[in-house]
Figure 1 (tube, rainbow, N blue to C red):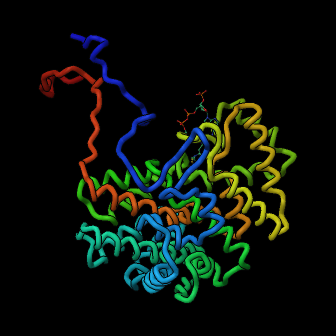
Figure 2 (cartoon, rainbow, N blue to C red; figure 1 turned 60 degrees about the vertical axis):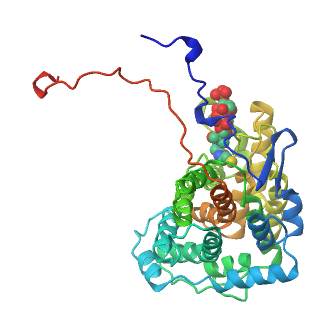
Figure 3 (tube, rainbow, N blue to C red; figure 1 turned 135 degrees about the vertical axis):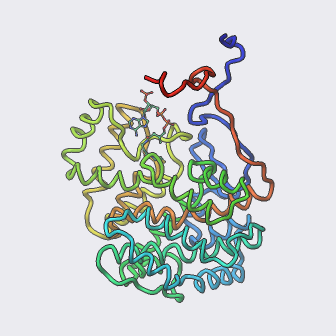
Length: 381
Ligand code: COA
């Protein structure tokens, strides 16, 4: 017996167009290519604020005043150390482990060490979110340095969040223009409504599981090349092209093979990603500071050709990839940097989900075998 067509469920593959819940954290407006965090345009936040101010905004709904900001900074800076036990675990990671796998495992381990891991009350979740924000850069940089045969560097509580990240990775803080460009990237990466990793984190939180579990799952989702992993893929692509003179010909070969071009397209924005102009401006600044125009020139040619031939616009990962390369970061660190930022958005969503929770549990439409008896072993082919 088959179902009448009228009873066929309306399946939205990839949940395209499905509004799964309300949120007050951020608003994506594809019709105007714009994005606000708690009502503030992301490009204004990027120009006017530090990453710490934006983290405070996402977690508290309002921008901090001077006293609130300095208390927030002090708290974050005081929590940056990781335990000798975690450092020992990191030393035992396979040398060629991907840094996203390393930070996913480190966050999971931090959960087992956290004295409040099982407390899913809002105050405890906020305290745990602060600890994760503070410790994630330390763990990312330790895994990176150990993987390259170098000793990890202890965090410096006198440095701002972005400065400390450079200190942890390189042992020094670059000039202010570079730190500002990095901070801008963190602000732009901090939050983006119900993207795959945030929805994953909310799904985990909806079961009543703890913050560390939700963030571990979020990191696993972010690693994929269709999501956060695209910023690394963009730089691999630019490296493969090698020179602006080859960009158009290279792109044509992708078209001929009907292959994806990383850093282009978006599930929600179809006419351009709100964050791209700001990130491109700062990536251009990095090209000036470093004195290497090659990557941005290649990017400009690729974007123009994609627009002309496919009408597909770049997403944030497209300018972020070369920007991080120009800042001196190795490619496998690009998506972990995204984690160091997105922990703010993930935690804001976990808090919001828990405050008005309903278990996330969609349905599926079964298309497998009709019900049948289990055959005896002798009757199986
Ligand atoms: N390169 C080439 N073609 C692309 C493309 C890209 N980056 N992104 C979309 N397209 C094409 C699709 O092949 C599809 O063509 P078709 O209609 O002929 O089949 C059309 O544009 C619509 O795309 P679709 O796959 O339906 O969009 P989606 O909403 O399912 O996917 C992404 C969105 C982000 C997964 C997709 O654009 C992508 O894979 N981009 C590359 C990875 C990336 O940069 N991810 C970071 C996202 S922030």
